[in-house]
Image (cartoon, rainbow, N blue to C red; front, side, top):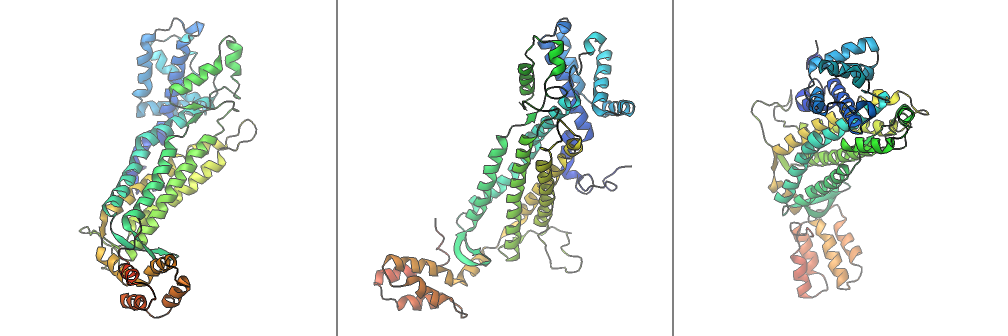
Length: 446
């Protein structure tokens, strides 16, 4: 019996509570339901042309037809799987299920024969899958990602005036502000989120090899390309044309690359926050009963960022494979895309686990401002850039080399060292006052 303890994947096991909402979009149940929806909406679209044989169809039944997928149940899905045991074809099983439901509504066989009319299975799959992806990203993925963005952006605003020692190449560098460092990540995220919102969700709809052969031979007087364009657009998707038997997936690759970039930005963020915690720029809220280490009682590990980093990495590996594999198919079609498409919910699930871990981690952060200030005060050498730049302005000879000689020694540079250096400069008193006013705490730029 499958439970959270017996599931092979942690998505459906350990992390089930974090990914359960994705079952509405990427489970076998969801795939069947989306296939049923496409079949039903396609039949309704044929009635609205109308095809001559469907002119007499009672349009008041449309709401009953839509209830077949709107009220789709676990029992319905089990029925489809039972039919599949005989057909050994998953989409044909859906067609037979829909026809069975038509019979229950007393719809004639003459009318029900137009279910799946002229289609191949990929017209259903390559419409159902992007439809589920589109709805998941809009209804679950982007709202969760926006929560992460909002937290980072809020902290950027809260800490916009907090000075912090910057580190380039791991070495003390010109001071920055903590809030600005957070805002860098917020802006990077926002740009990629905006790009994701602009992406097309592609669908292939064109018969056995993309040419609508069966449609055209049966009803040559109908503009089937316009019909297909309008039908796919009515579902909120973008029809790819021309195609082979399958969608060429280039737009899907764009979406997955975009999501991979979002994860890369967050992975970069997690590593920075992990490092700041190790430097004691942040402390973490302690929750009663939690254990940081099985052996070291004092530890409060930055596990949320580590968990997020691991899940973001797994997600990106799969996003990368999806984006590089799906656009490649032998001639008019091979089946390698089919099994791969069944896994598009996996990287999204790992991404969602990571988003929630980041949110949890950010909720624990406690700013340790005294540590930030002490690091600034203990690294007075970082004002050397400011001093040599002003000396350049004043025409002082070899200012860079002069400051280099002062600061690149094994002896510590402190406030007194800098003040003594300024006192010995051959510059005006007002310039010396300007230089003395510069400290690591206020040399933070704009």
